[in-house]
Length: 258
Length: 231
Image (tube, rainbow over all chains, first blue to last red; front, side, top):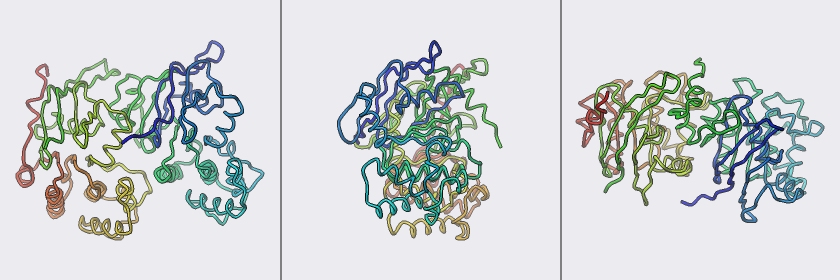
């Protein structure tokens, strides 16, 4: 078995002025792996996600990426235009608030097509069929393809955002608290949807969340962050069931039982 | 043929937030398990039988030592990359925990199907096979499309077993697989374990009932001898 390393992160560091955002982050991500980044608010997990997804330029460190085409690239020293193109076509970012990731002025189908147009797919019926296909895959009613995002419930908007991102077959998907704003009753089904899609299309994913239940069901491995640094890393269920670091032990023993 | 090997395995827990309490659980485990063996882990309650199984599954990290699995090559689960362990779990080692742990609102039949999908074994005959297994385990047809989280303890345990027994694993780790079952279901599960053994599956099981151990196990490993002296 030889699984390809898709991302190599070395000593990634970001400061906001004198304030540490994240510091000395190292990890490797392999194709098809789902990485969870957990920690309390202010731990640096969102800063790290933004550095990785190209939304901010880190103060120091290295991100090597190796996609299906084009060999190993030093992501941070790519020309801005190439970076943008890569982020548009190879990356997918699922925001916590679906309204940040959706274009509210165009229909559900239009939202999905918009992504595909970026990767230069222009055939109308293909775009429409793909839109329907992804709506069904994320358990939406594909008859609502012409409706606007605001006519959907919060859970459905999140499904639409996930459809939009996954339809263009991105090589790495970044998710920021994907079930954050949702009712508990829809969280589980969305997690189940994400999980089954991920297995079908073998996508590589990085998920930031403070919810340990989300990482347990969705992720393969974990980075636990505190005060900008990674305090523990490993196989998700190992970290949660046999935490080694005092902070991880505190985190896992603080979950309220229902 | 040797399939599992433990070398100088030690396990202690350090509870940082409880005054740094150190619990020494198991010490100096050196042993080998051969393909097709059915091993019973024995010893009094709290001795570390579940800890032992969880270390084999990579769920607990040994404090030191090696836990090697021999497939085509040797892999030390105590010192492997996450995707290597996940791959091992997908195709090679199945684990049935004491309690079923699944996402809410996912139907029983999908939970069992999922194992085959993960192993890329799901095809047009799979549903028939899954339904047959669920029927054999006395899970009524009316329940197949319901989430098992509302089932009784015994039913949940049988779903938990179905989820793993449907797969094609070389090694099965079973933590009290018959604990909450009545006598009829117990003997059904024992027969299923026996048929796995006939297919040369290696099984490590925690089971308190001595009669069951005598019926299925080829060897007992008593964990008493791995208790650290300082306890």
